[in-house]
Amino acid sequence: DRSQDSLADEVARIFEAVLDVRDATEDDNVFSLGGDSIQAVAIAYALEERFGFPFALEGEPPTIKELAAWIKAKRAGPAKIGAVHDT
Image (cartoon, rainbow, N blue to C red; front, top):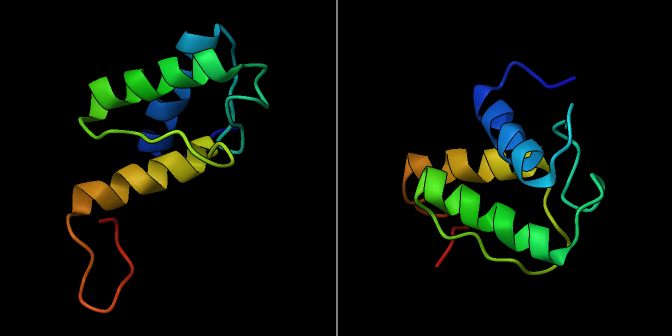
């Protein structure tokens, strides 16, 4: 089940559309849903098109919940003084 987080739900719908799967959960990532690296690039592109932020593909693939939290943080603007933030 997905949480009531509409952002995570929106990210999950993108995963489902690109991977042609149903019922993605917020704890899923591209590989847990049976995707491959080419589909990971397609998801990153779809997310960038939808949200307007570039999505780097490095390291362990993030879960839907982690992507939603990252998008929420990016929308909130620069991190406050003393906080770790993207450069």
